[in-house]
Length: 77
Image 1 (cartoon, rainbow, N blue to C red):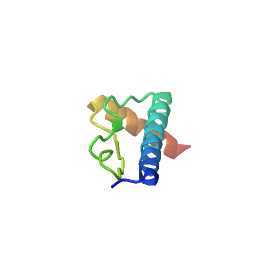
Image 2 (image 1 turned 30 degrees about the vertical axis):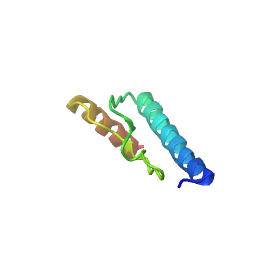
Image 3 (image 1 turned 90 degrees about the horizontal axis):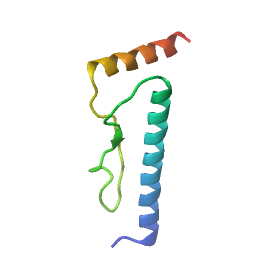
Image 4 (image 1 turned 90 degrees about the vertical axis):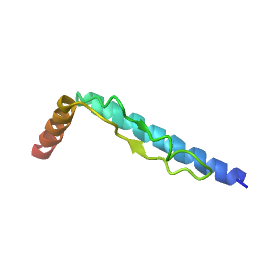
């Protein structure tokens, strides 16, 4: 049986995962990178005690190269 405390913790984990996913989407967007499949993995977010994972998803080779370029620029800074 799931307690109210357990539900609250589960909701906090899901909200944190949503916030992290949205923050990552925003920051990647500022860098000119769009990961179209970026989302919370639904399987990891299911159940009474979810441990949500951020699924970066699939992207085109062009997007992968853009991400590499952004990371390399950051290394040089």
